[in-house]
Length: 216
Ligand code: AMP
Image (cartoon, rainbow, N blue to C red):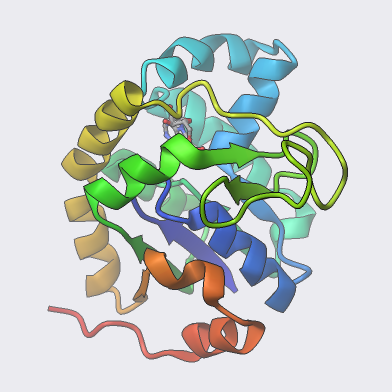
């Protein structure tokens, strides 16, 4: 299945992707945010271009992002399916994606502004394996250490209230026409972000088997 995870920042897309991976283990999880952060860490040309946008809570320009995603999706491990997280975020990106692949499902993770602003303050993640924690609702067993791989957990530089408001404003200005188009195609499903932590593998399977929202 070719799946896009859509929704505001900190809605729970990464956590949901981790659960989806258990049901679809051969599907690569492609997070554009993670790819940018990796490039910034390794000081690559993409990382150098992306850094100032990310730290300001702005979108990296489409010409950089689209090329990066096209290159990733054209790799052989994506042929039978993928979980694309954080792309598309603009109509231009959606159209670029339409040129290279045909999606089966777009899963919109819903959350209110208040919920996601509170969530980023408590969010920490593992720089090594990508596991995401919340110091309030899903703390690591040992303080600041990843349960999975033992690496020291990090708080993202762009996970602060000021940048978050900018990221949310950007999301809200772009999301409408993208969601409308996917709903029109009959491939849009909605999942409430506040229940994601509790979802079991069989809940995830049920979500994948759900009928998409009717086009309107
Ligand atoms: P995320 O980890 O998905 O919250 O992404 C972190 C940051 O990476 C975003 O705030 C953007 O600056 C950048 N980014 C991630 N995905 C995209 C995208 N599809 N288009 C443009 N910028 C992106």
